[in-house]
Image (cartoon, rainbow, N blue to C red):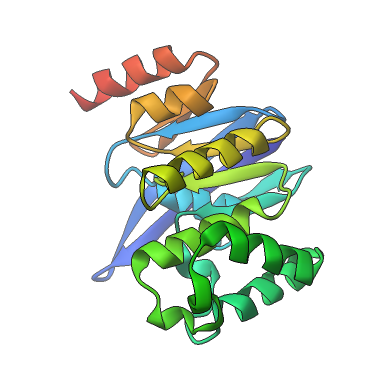
Amino acid sequence: MIRLENLSKGFWVKGTYTPVFQNLNLTIPTGKSVALLGGNGAGKSTLLQIVAGNVSADSGRVFSDGAISWPVGIASSVHKDLTGAQNTRFIARSYGVDTDSLCDFVQDFAEIGRHFFAPIRTYSSGMKSRLMFGLSMGIQFDTYLVDEVTAVGDARFKRKSRQLFSQRIQTAGAIMVNHNLKELHAYCDSAMVLHRGQIRFFDDLDEAVATHNRLMS
């Protein structure tokens, strides 16, 4: 279960405070795979970062009774001057999982060969995404946060990534930002719509999509 309590966030732009959302109150039930819908600039990625604990809210709090991943698809969780292997070991220690097991899993899954032992700053965006996806899937979280990506690479690698993600959410929840409605229907059973600083939860994904489309028209 994840609960947002009076959550507010904004940013200062050229001396003017611009709120992104204000006083969000919402409870996401345990084990739910939830799509997060909203227009460009609605604050979807910001909300994921706050739920993950990477960004602080201006006020309010996020409460969870389980382990939450960092947002898959955002590479800010790794240090660019460390190698893929070093980042993997650091994250393993941070989350209390076996370092050798996680390294073996990520190296095998990401399929980046010797680059696993090279600094992240030498990676292409595709290699970085493969590494981050492997890192996230290599740790058993109660809720996975996914920001606009479930797979990168060629068709075979995408199939492998989607299969693994599907396996993970059999026993975990997810909050997923994705403009591909086909993928949302494949993974999500409910949704949240973030619009003009407010949020609403829908048990029915199709109802949420219809509401989102109406708000965007």
